[in-house]
Image 1 (cartoon, rainbow, N blue to C red):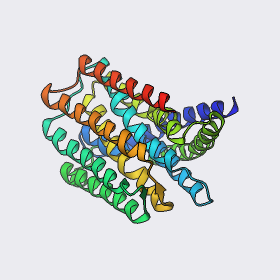
Image 2 (tube, helix red, strand yellow):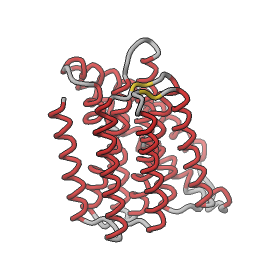
Image 3 (spheres, rainbow, N blue to C red):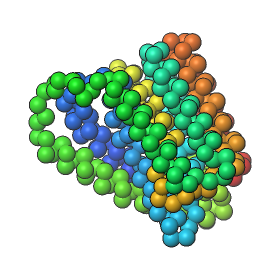
Length: 312
């Protein structure tokens, strides 16, 4: 099937390009003395979420021409969050002990839960207006400002010279360009699949694209675990979910107002909220996440995906 082949090709290209862009972005970040958790939250989260952002923006541009990709955009954002906390954190937890300082659990966990509540309140009228999109984007901007203030990264002394700086920046820009092109292929193919299979856009956005665009986080988290950088892995996932709740939907609705399906509002978003609470409880009560907790997350993720398949 052409749509499925192009979708898989687009996902593969986006994953490869994301890793390439991140490798160069990390070199730039290492130019400054910042913590692994900060790199995970502020840099890797933003970088690895570029597919979700670009896919959502491309889909929103279609709304300007008379289409309606609202369910796809919201479903992609929520599905990515499920993939990161259920699938990615579950797999990473099977590979080793994930830890996060309790002060980070409380601060960033509260921010993530508050972001979901904000999105829920905004979606109660069944739509996300341009003004509400600005609110979501501004909230993420405040979160980033909080990160930099907390870390004090801007005041840090440079660690070392950035060798071959132009090559590193060129690699970063080139990787981002491939992500943009691959994301356009993903949107076209996913919408074509939804029409061909006669299923709702939210199903394709959550189960196929949402999980597929979580692959960069999976590869980053596994790589971080293999390098004994558990805090970087956790920071990447927490930061990614804050971003996914706020930025893709916020940017897309600023381009063109979105509809908010009642099913996504009263089933998917509350389910994500409960999964996030579960993750935060694991980190607070068990001083981290190990194999037992990881299996619980994988089981919860599998149950959610099966539910969406039956609903489709």
